[in-house]
Amino acid sequence: MCVWTDGFMGDVKVKSLGQLRAMINTLLQSYNSQHHLFHLEQLVNYSITEKQFAQIIGRCRMYPHLPQDFRRDVSPLLFGDQQISSVVKDFYKDESFCRDAFGNINLWRLYNLFTGANKSSYIDSFLDRSVNAYQLVEQIRWALEGKQDNWYMN
Image (cartoon, rainbow, N blue to C red; front, side, top):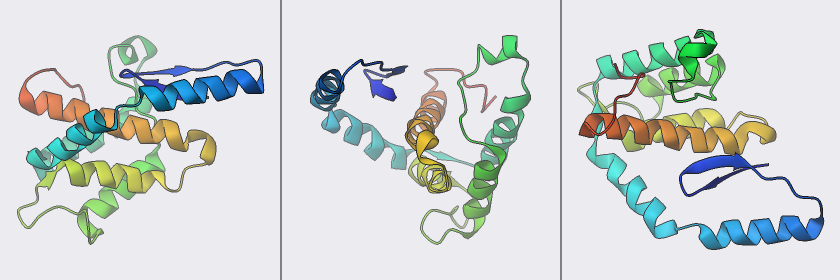
């Protein structure tokens, strides 16, 4: 089981039902919903162009084929080609989260395209991909702010 705590995702190993309950309780108590909500609300304030979107999608498609030594320096991407294709299709056709009339898309809409594409995932990868979608969009936001380089946008 993977969990997201303090900005890091990691495996949790337990040996009993009691340990599992304790770990779930700790996870729920440490979750800061106000912090998470604040960051989600910020996504509407950042947009990317259609050209930047195409760059990101191209890099997403390249990611699985990167040499292992290069991959260590790139944020992981857990979405497969089928999910990426869904994101691209919905960039143009989704009634709620598609690009605007100028071809731009804000990061809130982009995040929703990724989470929408994740709906077809198996249960064993659904949560990890949901977290990965948030991480990817947050890293794009950081790149737009100039706080961090991002391979997907370079």
